[in-house]
Figure 1 (cartoon, helix red, strand yellow):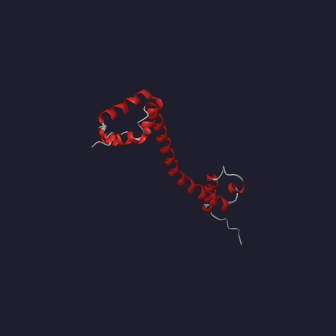
Figure 2: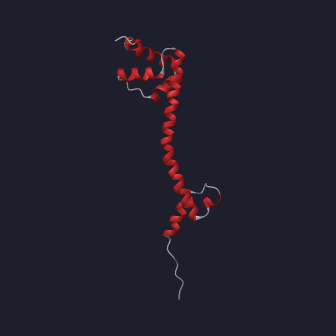
Length: 128
């Protein structure tokens, strides 16, 4: 009988997986079974950590805004600023506020002072 050569589909699939895992160390980049396991593990970690990264950046922005606000006035804080922004219906999110706070503090103080002027101070004193 003549020799029958197999097709190329399985080999093409394995080489595609090997290209994905080419930067992994040891058998994780050489053996097909461990490559597929590590590929699944890497994709799961990437999916999980995308949400974690969003949380991390939100915490960073809040910390930056709060630090700059507390430099300006002792009685004013991050939560009061955000509350006043929502009351005034200003579409400034935390990322934009943090960028303004880091790059241009005088502009940030101007924004917070304008917001504070508009808010009725009786609410903070508890006189209503």
